[in-house]
Length: 152
Image 1 (spheres, rainbow, N blue to C red):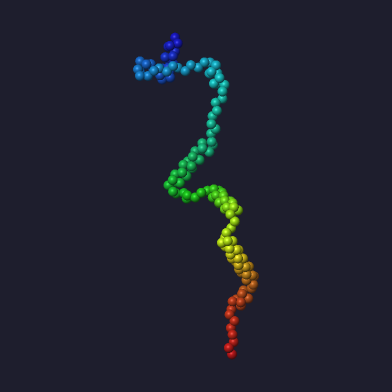
Image 2 (tube, rainbow, N blue to C red):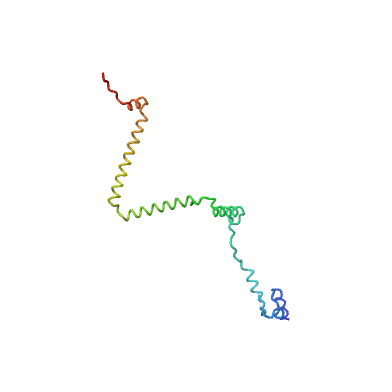
């Protein structure tokens, strides 16, 4: 009786007898006891949570379209704004660290002094331009006229 059951189970599992395929061996059926089956039923099997963004058909089609356009070169090859800002801050921080480690050379000091002087002159020029804006127009025109000497 037991042999008949194993043949029946093996036929259900898709395993054929050795007579059907002489080059294959029969695989013994996996026997499950009632206790094992009951334990498997009691255990909750974990399942991976579904990502709602990836499950969304709209999101997937948009992502595919973006990838397609990027490969074709339709989209500009620019980094996102947040990434650019973060890289800029990182570069500035590295420059500050390098400056702190190395004292400025004589040339750098002189260039810095020259830059400050130029900024000072530009600031003075702006102040003078603002003062001229506040002066009435006829006085501005009078200042631009050349003095004419009388030859008589």
